[in-house]
Image 1 (tube, rainbow, N blue to C red):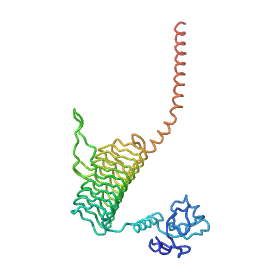
Image 2: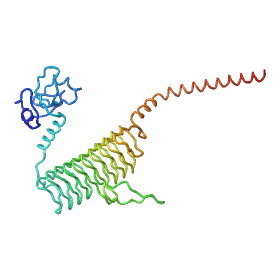
Image 3: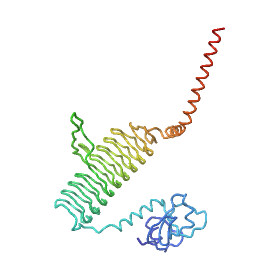
Length: 355
């Protein structure tokens, strides 16, 4: 990357205040910046660093007004965070491997690879697979028989696509992810468990990102579907026959059991667990370590705890849980007091009866 501040502003539809001819060759955080780098300010908690940063230029939101003098060049854009994302994507594109099939890769004669795609050394593309334009299959990734990979996709090292997996355009699958392994399906009998063949597939729609070592199981008959724009973190588990709605985000170590339907724009924080055969409404938020045992029918619900409860109710319950030792001591004291009063009453009753 090598641009002037003015060139970046023109590319981003922004404007410059300061030295427009300053040359930018890399990125850095605003607090650790150095000369020649570009940073950004979108969270005002970091504003103090703007006045001391060594960065040569900083992206800021249109409408931002510094509270004191700024030495660095400011590039005003509609949204600094989104502008940064666009620029980082641009740098990623410039770092892309050269297109073509490495002589050290294995590509089956019946596979179809677009001439602009990259198949790196030690990658394996099986029979009847299709790799779209500008996609990259990195070393030691495996694309199974009959898989379809769209345009501008990245399959990082050790990604495994089981047969018939469908990947849309602009998808990113990080290292070690396994897409399309058998679902956890067994029939219990007197002599043990009989495996139920998993003959379906997995479909990732456009603009899906899958984190490292995440697993998505294929369906029994039809398809496990991850809808467009959804982002899954590292170490996420999606069971067979699930459907994850568009633009949903699921954080690390979360798991969704089989045949569950997650609604659009849901947010599952870290270590959330969702039981099987359930449905969630749109824009549901599940706080970290929430356990979902039933359908969530209210759009926009925010839940926490195990089992999942409305957030504020769960937080109050959690606060009371901390007080349980003191409450137990108070209860024990009250119990002793009641017993003492009961003995006193019995003694008075006896005395009155004798009299």
